[in-house]
Image (cartoon, rainbow, N blue to C red; front, side):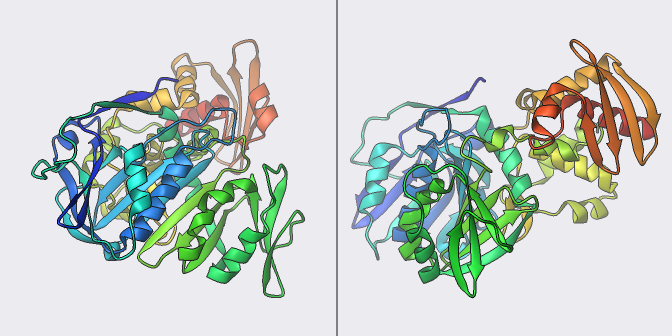
Length: 446
């Protein structure tokens, strides 16, 4: 898969001026109007020591890999706007997602513009993070503030950084899992430390469950409800260094009990760590986004909504559909289309979506989602024969590469006779044949 390559205008820098640390994060974005903005945010960090430790944890995540892909340097994504700043990223294997939510109480400054961009965390920057002490005054500039005078770095350094398409696919999938999660446990600092002290050593295979027996939390290989299943439990060590700084920790699990999230709460900030079901499974390959793509909608709907929303703005699909007189099924598909190219995130604490200002390209939606692209090819070649087509039950034959497959959709449950569906049984989303039948069926009913 082709990655997106960004050229940073300058390197990220940190300088000291009159005893004040000044941090400038170099950014890059495909949107020309965003690249022309000298700075999204300029101001002071309320707790620079804690913020620096969270940034270092994010860097640790994006430099790690727990699957077959080798670890490689990937620079985090930052979204500024709506009085909040969010830093987020994935491990190289796309099986771990992390996000730092900096609330209004964590920053003191001015939001000059809103936007989402890719930022540069280089080695000198990480070393500087590590040297930040408590009670220091640190000024943060997201972007490159041209008025800032930097005396220690007179030479501009052009740095090329690749933003993988897998990250955008991961952003589309992970928010669907997050929006499907419920809080199971809330542990205080002491309880959280005790849990982490019992983590098995090494890269352990098999499932572990966080359970509560008689008020005591423990990790077990045997499930006992209520519980949080943790696949690839060694990945939890990514946030181990933050334990002395937390006030409490929240443990979430999604409805099928496979994917979990752990939120480190620092009152004015929260750092989220979401884990895919297992170490060898990444969020980018789950295909969950297709469950809500029910029918084709005009491209103008998608571009229109994309222009209406601002970075970090809250987005409630139900309320938006009522306000704009849009049918709920159309709104679900519209939301799924925006999600499929990474434009929507999900805030577990607020229980609502938020918007990212990424470059909108409809062709990218198909490129990043080959199943959707192949389903549309099936529709275009009219390779679907409906045997039964009722609202509650659908049976269809879909012409495949070497044979004809049988698709059955009954009471929102679907299955197909193709090899892909037989192998995964819906655990990686629906196959292209089921998706094509759904699109054809709903377009016909419209």
